[in-house]
Each structure stands twice: as structure tokens, then as C-alpha cells.
Image (cartoon, rainbow, N blue to C red; front, side, top):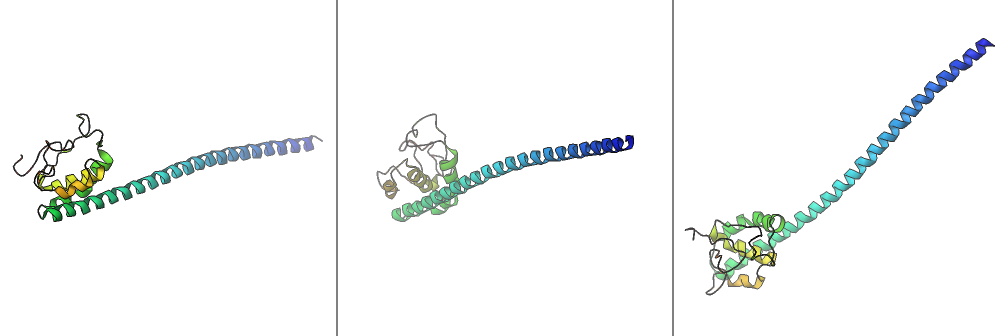
Length: 173
């Protein structure tokens, strides 16, 4: 009888240890599942952020393309100007005006808005094209580039358009 009771006790102890092992395994599985859910949630957020960035990049590329087209239209219509300097900086100016800087038609004349100085003033067609794309000047006005009495001269003139922060040019105007 004692031997049978001892065997039962040993079996119960062994069973208890097995149950403890199963419980620890279950706790580990539950923790792993929680971590997997957290990772899945994070991955979903990253995918959504990635899609938003793709959309933003696509929009920036479209703005840059429109700006380049308008630079070429301005220079061709005026039969004068420097398209190379404007075209070479189109991507940078696009990112600045459409992603980085806080400038709108409403705050263009505000002293508190972001500022941009186009040092190479001969690239003014770029500045004007960016202004038109941003809605700071009417797109039709681009066809007055370098015309008599136009606000759009060969070098930016800060007295003519509020969004121009500094008159610039080859001699530093």
C-alpha cells in the first residue's frame, strides 16, 4: 500500500511539473503572440506611412514636371532667358515650396512666413513657375516674362511680387 501511495505521489509530482512546464510554455506562446500582434500593427503603420510617402513623392514629381514645362514656356515665349539654370534647380525648389516651406497666397506678404533667396537671379523663370504652381501668381502671367511692364523680369525683383524675398542677379542687384 505504501509503495502504491508513493508511486501515486511521484506520478502526481511529475504531472504537476509537466503542468508547470505547459503553463510556462503557454505563457511564452501568449507573450510571443502579443509581440507578433504588435509587430503586425507596426508593419501596418509602416505600410500606410510608405503609401503616404509614395503619394507625396508622386505629387512632388508632378509639381516639378509642371514647373519645368512652365520654365520652358516662359523662356520660349520671351525668346530670351536662361533655361538651364532654372531646370537644374527645379527639383530642389519643388521640394522647398511644396514640402518644406510655409508659404501660401494668403501669407506671401507676411513677415512671419518662410523665406527663400534665389541667389542665381538668372534662374528667375524657375521662381516664377514655382509661384504659379503654388498659386502665388496666376499661371497666365508667366507669358509676360521679360515683357515691358511685366512683374516677371529677367532677375527677381522683390518690389514687384510679395513672395520674392530679395532682388538678386549677376551683380547682386
